[in-house]
Structures are given as structure tokens and as C-alpha cells.
Image (tube, rainbow, N blue to C red):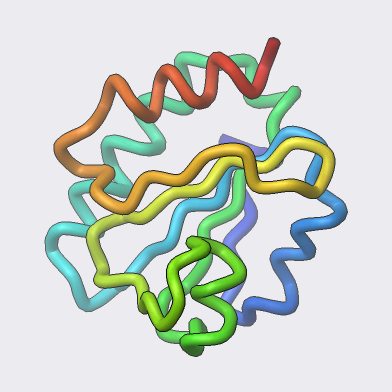
Length: 115
């Protein structure tokens, strides 16, 4: 997982720089997010990660405004369950706000990103 980048400031994500990116929102204080991160890293290892920009973003840096930019839901603040977005050429192409129970969604969106 050498391509995995951990950021604690939303500004450091730089969505516009992501060609094929997966952004995982992580909450260190959430057991659900810890389990989801384990699943995320396991699933991402199934893919040619050299082709992906993988970012783990600390949820505690998300304001309502930043969360709206990521998730498109006015006022949504990541709830610590491993919310994930997929970005192609700087544009968000998919979102999942319930990652722990949705392994297949993570696989499907990532496959689509690699096409």
C-alpha cells in the first residue's frame, strides 16, 4: 500500500489533482471506521494500486462545507463509518457513506475507476 497517503487537512486532499483516486474518510475514534479501514486496505490490495491515488482523510478536519464538497449532501458530516468517494480526473464520480457493510460496492466503484 505504498500509494496510500494519509492527510489530516482537507486542503491536502487536492481533489483536482486526482486522476483515479479513492478517498477514504477515517475516524480514529470510531471502531466502525477502524474495521472499515482494515477492509478498505484489504480490498484495495486486490487492485493495481500503482494506478490509483489512495487517500485516507481524517474526518475530524471536515467542516460542513468540506463535507458538502465531498458528499454532495448539504450539512452532511462524515459519521465515522468509513465513508468513501471515487474521483476521476478531479471530479467525484461515486460516493458511499456506509462502507463497512458494502464490500461489493467498494470493489465495483474501484473497478469502474480503473476502466
